[in-house]
Image (tube, rainbow, N blue to C red):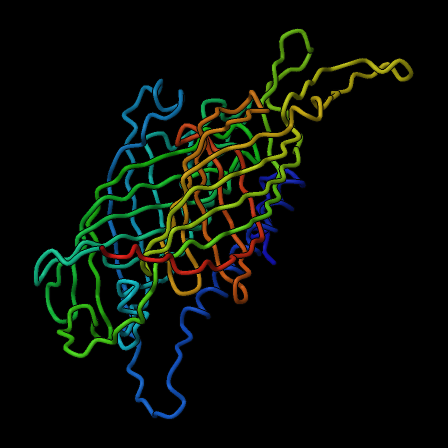
Length: 426
């Protein structure tokens, strides 16, 4: 493989971590896409499949980098950004009940290129990302409201360097995760052309795998021009749409095991350490249990408990001279075992598709072991079902809606619940 894939600007342990992430991420995506594309048809009927409508889109955006850290707030220049994005995607055909139940979802791949207010510190990043979206509501016979979610990897950032780039405390690595949430209006211009206009919220971070990592957050109004190669089924007037089976309201229960690593900053007062950035990864393990209320096909939500074991809790570090060779070495001492545990209660929401979901939590630590973090936390990620009720997830946990704590991957199982009994009418 080329050096580009191996991310040459990262340290050896960070290279290994990012390689595992990339392989896991693309495995989950392509597996989920292949499952999503699989359609069940009655065995005793013969159907003539329509071509899947494909599209090409070009997107231009300009907006502000949100002042979520000191680097942005204290900058001398206006925190402006602009971007150009090329996307290729596939719409649902509209000939299955899943298409109708899930809002005529579409998915594809995009290439994003950005320019920032401080090119010297941030560089010229680009990203390769995967996107998926669906209709929220039809506003009129010509205009509909849609959402879209983006997840990918960005490259070519100019990261923090204590000598060459000390200003950029936002990003400590040249490769970073790209997460986006888009809400927009879609209006057809003709049988083949559409125009989209709305707001894109983007986040770039390495998930505290390499510090500093304050993150970059961007709010960008955009305009997108779309060409539909085979026509767009969302513009067609369907009179015989498939009807989705009745979905009875119930609670499903998700159990998840998580594994990750993270880095932290340490106190340098009286330690002899030259920097607060400690070049060491600490193990993070987690167990979570969620009760997800399911009323329809598009969304699920419910309470969730997260138990986390974090080796970085209560860590102390200092520089010490070895009595035998006289050399100085950096020493790290873990905190007490009981300090490493946290227990959080959160509200979890999911945007669902036939074989995968996008999810988000907002939670608060009832038991708070790691004083380095804030009690209020957020989690976002992608869950893909691998077989029946077995699923894998990739996500990022953050605090204050901007500061990443760590990236993680996990394995889990869904226990389907029974339909809730309706109250008897008097």
